[in-house]
Image (cartoon, rainbow, N blue to C red; front, top):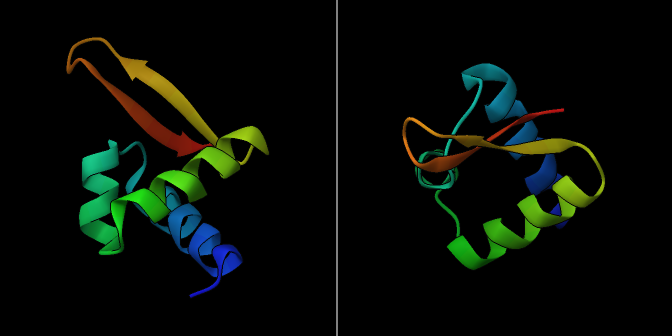
Length: 65
């Protein structure tokens, strides 16, 4: 899968599920965690995905921008 295809898949999952943690997103994607981190970081820099803290859970959540 190309990086752009992975970005589209991440965005599709986030739009369907709403906010997800990295672990939850990993479970849906079933790809290498390091590759997924790179894709998410790129999407955050481009403003496609937001990384927001969830203080109750003590984790960061990812959601579509």
